Image (cartoon, rainbow, N blue to C red; front, top):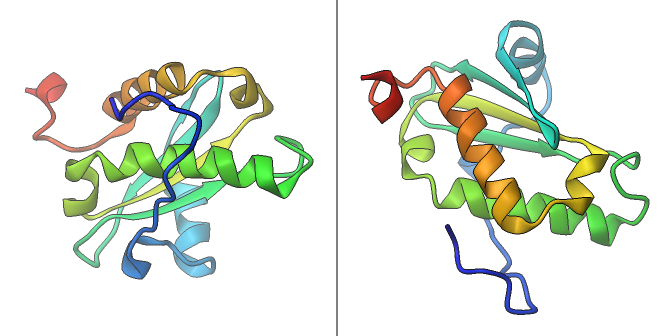
Length: 131
């Protein structure tokens, strides 16, 4: 796990190529991606043809009214993804749609749930649980 919160959250910036733009690829991911539900989020994964992983994190106003709160939740998810080297190297598109219950989740609980759902959803054959 990344280091526990010490009062400040580190800003995480992903390379632009790892951010998934809206449009055709996004719609294909929504329609044909492998979906997994959690109490905190919905995760959708689909293999892409570009050779590296891309990510989108969605936090609507229903999750948190203030943009500051929504951005903080997004950064927590981005920090988890940043620590997952298998995601960046593998050609998969990942969409994480946050639910309002994520506001009450501790960072550790959120990371545990993300890891658990990634193992369930991930089509990676190199995953320890898949061997």
